Image: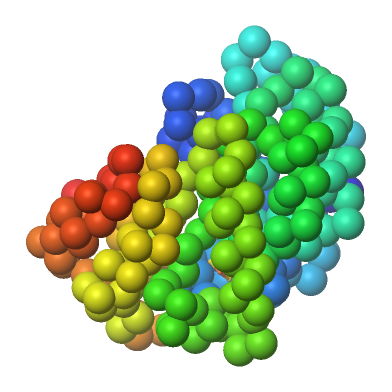
Amino acid sequence: MQIDGIQKLTLLDYPGYTACTIFLGGCNFRCPFCHNASLVYWNGQRAAMREDEFFAFLEKRRGILDGVCISGGEPMMHPHTESLIRRIKENGYLVKLDTNGSFPEKLGKFLNERLLDYVAMDIKNSKEKYRKTAGAADLDLGRIEESRGIIMDSKISYEFRTTLVKELHQMEDVEEMARWIAGADAWYLQEFVDSGDVLMEGLHAHSKEWMEKAAALAAPYVECVEIRGVE
Ligand code: SF4
């Protein structure tokens, strides 16, 4: 399987660990605020590394890196993600998976087979606005709900995360999401940043004050609520 992008060292992506992050192209969502449009519309021609090159890289980083973050796009879309994860685990690395939560069957299987050490799942918005915020008109919200439940019932470390955008999220949406994931270990509220590779133009970040108010609103529902990306 080809690796479509790689960040060879990250101290931020995997909380508490030194890791690299690999990106697998393609996604079944079209979130307007997505900051990786070229990966979402990926057409397979721009491999950053072949799988064997990636494992040679991991071999050289043995003792330096603790884990591998697998991100996208949506990594669960690919038929070979499971074998890639198995190979990473066999090489002795921790695996963190980023997912949009629309593949609950695979998620449950991977967790049952102890292939994952950390999961970061997006919660895009309140249920009423979910499909619009994910850019997926036919999305079965039951699949998101199923993934949420699987993660919260699992014994592994996890986080939920939400990118908050002025044009898409109001304070009542934050409260509804907080109620939806009530009892969760961690929820990161991410500031929208225009990377220059965003799916839709004309979106804006909320103010620092608004983000802090949102975090305070969510705090009673979730063990740890933090804001990411606000200076
Ligand atoms: S932000 Fe949305 S469109 Fe972009 S990779 Fe994640 S799920 Fe896909």
